[in-house]
Image (cartoon, rainbow, N blue to C red):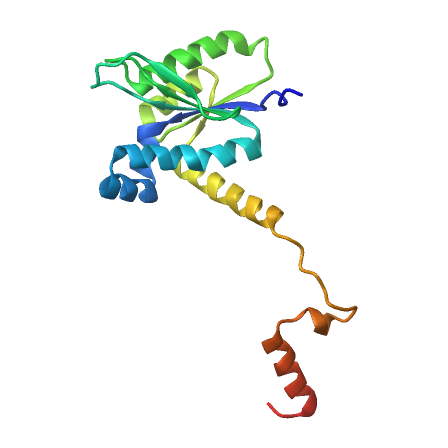
Length: 182
């Protein structure tokens, strides 16, 4: 069965996000840009699948003599490396323009995650939604928390009394209080 169609397309300005998130800046400074890119992609894999976004992380190859390349990482996330001389901003602008012409036929939303002010104004002008890097970080962390909470096994009670579901230290303190010794 094919995955349900995504509720939104999320374009992520990769290097802008790396330069904005302190954890990614630290990774970049300690282990290099490749490690920071990989960390960003890994963080967005679970986020995209959980929220149901079709996410594309855009990295520019502005100073590298390479052709554009797009890698599908999962069904929900792909990574795009732009052509030589093309910035992520120009790629995102072109994507927004193309998406706008299709927007009238589709009910899908387009969200662009960047903290670049000029890019923000541009994408909103094309009818896309804008998300700051800080908002994306908050959403990613909140989603990770929800995933951890959802996957946590329910605590099993070892009897029908609340006392039995407490840890040993709490049971000991309650027993002391019951006996009157604190």
